Length: 554
Ligand code: TRP
Image (cartoon, rainbow, N blue to C red; front, top):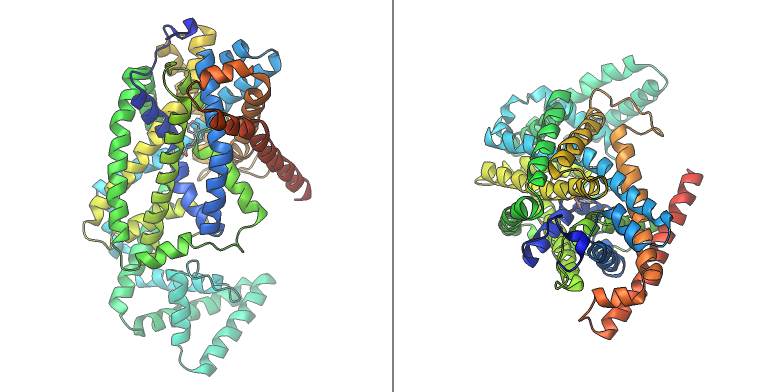
């Protein structure tokens, strides 16, 4: 290490170790859970294109800038700005990063904990107990899907399995008169219901459920359709039961925090690097295997077309903002994680090459996850629900139940989710820990133990947001979980990224930048410099203007 401040803080044992750890930070729930879902929501192929632009023009340049600050200073986010920046104001940017890491980790670990529950469920073959779903429950489900089906809009995926069945059952009522009566009765009941007369509805409800179920039972391939229905409903009910159980959700969250702490306490190379060297290659292998399986479904070609064919109509301004915002989240930018990892990097490693590899891997894995999830969901005609959570925790186990070796695939999938999340949580904790080591002179042990515990405790309200506290919305009408996620991902990460871009673009001396990017050719340097000075700040500034405008209008 050429910089004296880096002594005693630890450093990466190898360049590949750094790359795996940083990719591990970037690749996480954002890739497996959020990306596939927003891709579908915002016009598929067209969204992917915009996203690639955001990654290349904003994400990548900021990643280079963040790792640059870290390596130049050889310190945590606060220390780095203290050392490199002329004014105290910049130190606040570092401070904000550490606080963001603290908060982000607290709720991220809650969702990460779900992956452990699902790994355990896979081992116990819980997903196979679909016979527990009775005909009556199927009827009730058909009814609710039926009433929810939007009559005007037909969306092939959203009007997926459940809706389709309900609609088919309805059309199974061959007699036009009966159909009319059915619909008229329903409309009347709705009207009465909305006027505060639920009795009218309740009466109809029983009849309707009965007739839907009747039609369902009379239709072709009843046994098969029933089996699939049972599986879907069973898996959905498992998810519902689980998230409604505070003790379990909190328990797994605490376990996940413990695992994270166990790795971070081991230090940079013996803890984080070693864990990443095992977890990341395993994750790649599992993903590749799952992609191959997913592409093996008969409908794969069609599914790919559906996800990747550009639909420029769905590409709204909101979609562009979502793409930009997500590029920060998915690359772990804007809160000093890459800065901290960069601070353990030796001078001879190329920042541009490392950033390119990390960015490319992150993007590749997001696309692979999208392929797996969409081919699978499409093959099994599962509805793509409004939240990505459902894809990950409902659709996946239900559909794997229909494939040979499904229990193994499910187990593999949730292990993969857990691994991806773990390599992200360790980098989040490391930001906080490195601050207390560098700035407060704490030992790694003390910093990890105290801060890890504090974060674990802070996560408890987020864990309760889905059950005991689901109606407790103290913060701007949002649950604690939603509030944390909204403020951190939508505001603070882009804000942090904006300041990093401004700092490296306009404050850091040109000489330092050239020194850090030594070996990079002139053209590439100028391109990066232009992106970091103009493109990135304009793009992120645009997002803020829009966000502020929206929050005033709403
Ligand atoms: N990149 C992670 C993901 O895609 C999430 C994340 C955002 C993150 N910011 C971070 C992880 C900072 C570690 C550090 O899931």
